[in-house]
Image (cartoon, rainbow, N blue to C red):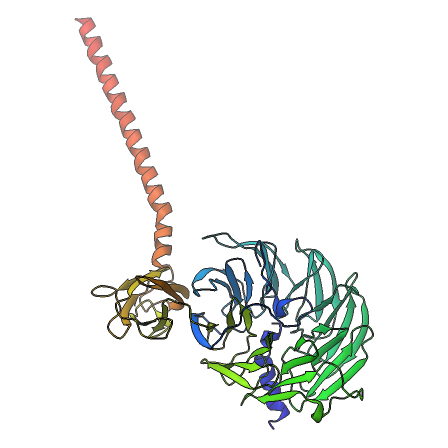
Length: 541
């Protein structure tokens, strides 16, 4: 077993996701799918763990997805909230904050609410087709926000690293704030029927609070709390961090219904369904009964339904359950699909980084982010094309020339020759010789020439692959361009330079036009004077 100090170092890294729809919201429009955080989903299940598409951000993706009509929102440590097409992974639009975005967006009506490490809770208006998001308001808490918001009676509730639980109106006005403890990574659990909200902080304080006025109703203390507690049949379930314990508590009075000694730190937020509770700890995924079988107050080893080793830390990702199947990410770079009855691993999909993002099921696919800077969609391949894009480098200067390698696949993961390739770039240009078409190995190599920039800039490169009688494949990558060696502070990007030239061009045009008018007036005046002089001479004769 690893030392406590080792766990403590990793805790802050692993558990960020524990803070972590427009006009017609879907069933998964907020963290853990609902304000009681049960983590269960409905709908079609993916049959296999195949990659449908991936989207590369500019930093690790610890946020979890939420969905609205026509799009999926997910945040990144690069400070952006991305709206992606759930079917293709193409970028719809993005919204910039001033810090890491590791919360999951709450989508209510036609607006989205999410916190950032810049200390602000944002409300944005979701755009229509081909539109851009508009910031409606932001509320500055003065400390980092890693707690995802939930909706309650025309208000939102969320925790903050200033140690307070906030309730804001949908217009961004403070209704109340309640002191919880120290930094809050967990998200609130709302009991609408009894008018209560529950949340814990990393100093180990777990509180029950009145939704009406923020008054503290009861308090429970353990070692640390990153876990968000689902509410199920009057009980709350959560892990105690490095106390190596898992707790079930009575929501009305805070009494302990039962406890379980896990033997490992628990930061994963549980999923509860029927008479089972599922959660991850370092090294294992667990399934326990929701009620203590012998009413002893302790779940004994023989009363554990199952535990499945995931070969490495499993501390950050929280499970999602659908129709007897459990999905959870692990630090061993795998997204696992397990039989919820037995814990047997049905399949796993390997990526290139830790998976602290919690998976979400939507329209027969699984969506999640990874520390490898990528958002993934896993499921059955649709009939059509998919594109894998691999730039030689993703961060470079304006002086560099960047190679981009593409491979096009069909739904059977076979390489597709003769597919037409179309690039769209937000700045700079693509150059390549010959027709833009994949070769006999389904591959294509392109060259990207970045624009001149005066400061670090993000470039979006989108590739669409097409072929007769097959659905197009689309993928997008975000590239970072830094100023080159010959770039002065006042150079700016090519786009910026054009924008800067416009006022000068307009000004110069105005000056020239004015000068021409003055010259014309002078000429007319001179001509008039000559005419009068000639007329006077004629009369004198």
